[in-house]
Amino acid sequence: MPTIRIQASFERDTFLPEDLVVNTFHFFQSDPPSGDLTDLFDRVQNFYIASNAPSPGTGRPAQNASVASFFGAVMGTTCTLKGYNLADATPRVPLNTRIFNFVPSATDLPEEVACCLSYRAALVSGENAARRRGRIYIGTLGQGAAEVISGRVRVNAQLTNNLLAASQQLIGPNQASADARKFIVRSDVGGLVSTPAVAEFYVDNALDTQRRRGPDATQRFVVPATPMA
Image (cartoon, rainbow, N blue to C red):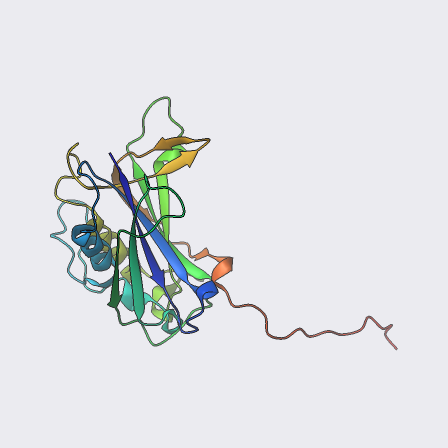
């Protein structure tokens, strides 16, 4: 049974390949993969741009803003989705591609700043818990993604609630079924592939850092080491 990887790439305002922000999502499906990835593309696109996640239900926050609305202005306005069958030989050719637009905020935090959406599968005795967890780093972010609480800069509660609500877009109607496209944790360590279904999402209120998303220096300022007069 194949694993499908959906890669979401954001061009940012430089339009340079080395500045792409990339998030990856993995789905396990029982039917043979084809070029029709409409369902999976819809789930990932709606994760970013929908502002009305499915009915909250028990323990789920309501959603009133899209995840993309918390992006910084430098994220640009375009995302490219590519779907890959991980059973194909490398280098892999995408099964299909989709481009969609979004509206970010008009402000920016430092480009390295991100918010981490974590997810995990149900824990199982005898298995390394780390192999059953995954992360999606949301960012770069606008200033509305952060707030000061008790003198500390934290993830804004609005982003936390909307991100947790948006995570439900990734879950299909039959996540618990063996015969369904389901959002999974994919771990490939030492040639052993693990693909358990996701059972829970969570967001910590500490901002994260993705150094590779920061801009390179354009200047260096130097002062000679001379004795004080």
